[in-house]
Image (cartoon, rainbow, N blue to C red; front, side, top):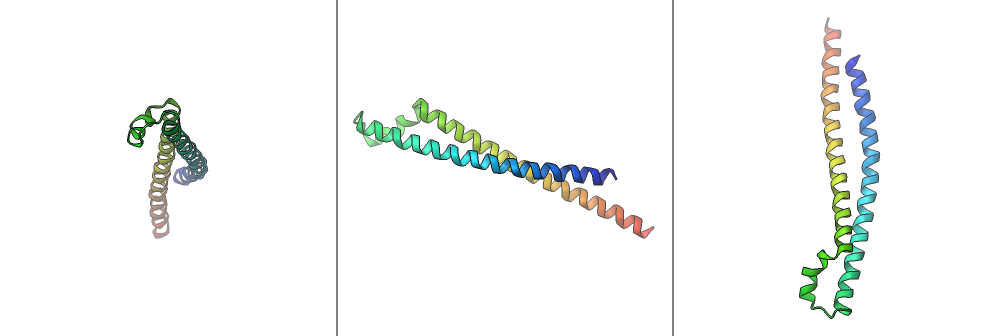
Length: 112
């Protein structure tokens, strides 16, 4: 029964991770939105208030602290989302392996 208990544990972790991934996905979408809005606002401010050439804005804008913070938050959110996605894939693989082991054990029991 150890394999069965381990399978149940992995299934519970998978369900929790899927819910967590949904939360990280929402955070990623919000962070991406905040970043793009701030990026646009700062680009317009540089062009209008500072009369900066459009070709220079792209070089300057990513160093503005507010833009950099929003970009960092977006990047961290994306990393958390992708990490959870990989964890889910690992859990699914481990579940398949355990299911195969359980099936082989039950086949051996039936044949004996």
